[in-house]
Length: 93
Image (tube, rainbow, N blue to C red; front, side, top):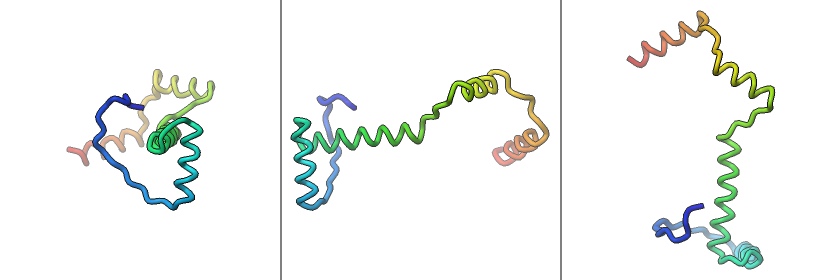
């Protein structure tokens, strides 16, 4: 997360019922945080998890070997790939 001393200019407003707010305040107190600190840190943790889940590819050992081999020793382009490249080049000129 960013430095706590950085100036904050953005604002996020959330409407919620009293029971939900009470639960969040209770959880925040267990973490010795303000409600805003708790909500922001919890949301950031979840956001980081979701982004990693969707943007990071994790490979097993054997899969990594196949992937690395394909990168370092790519196969020669076949006819279909050459045709696709010609279509792409023609469309982007």
